[in-house]
Amino acid sequence: MSAIFCADCGTECALVDGRDVDAHTPEIADAWVWACSVCPASWAHQDKDDGCVGLPAGQATVNARALLCLQVVVPLVRQAPPTEQSPAAARVRAFLADHLDMADQEGLLAHLSLDQLRQAWRVLHATTYDDVRIWAQWRRGMKRRAPASGEGVAA
Image (cartoon, rainbow, N blue to C red; front, side, top):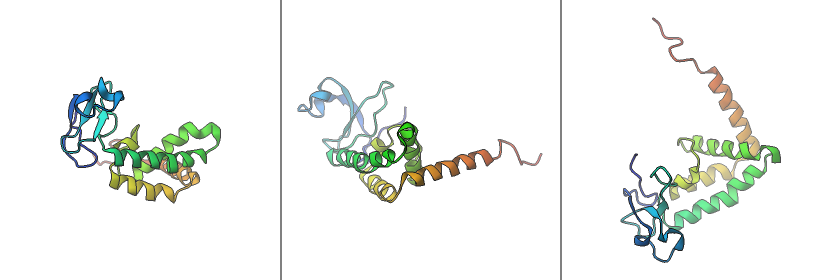
């Protein structure tokens, strides 16, 4: 497993008992969480593989992630026809990951820092779902045209 770093300060996080992080948050009192030793309110749940659900972050980053999702991502996905909204969410995530030069992954928003969230806001706020759909078609076409491994290499 790779190291887990705080989205706010970049410090390597440690797996700790939730009671050590915030005794006032009942949802983590009996859980193991990844927490930053520098940012007192920066934590994230441990996942089933002993990794981390997203990146540990303080309340400002968590709030910014929620705002981006509610005010930009959800309305963008809702521009897709109702029967396409599930794949639309994956397309929007892949579109954003590509524009942020990040790997496309589930829970992408939970991995972003405040600076990345600002950049994501700028990218998505000026985007329509048609832009995302056209990008996805273009990308699919690029993958079909990619040479196979070893193709075009002189022997």
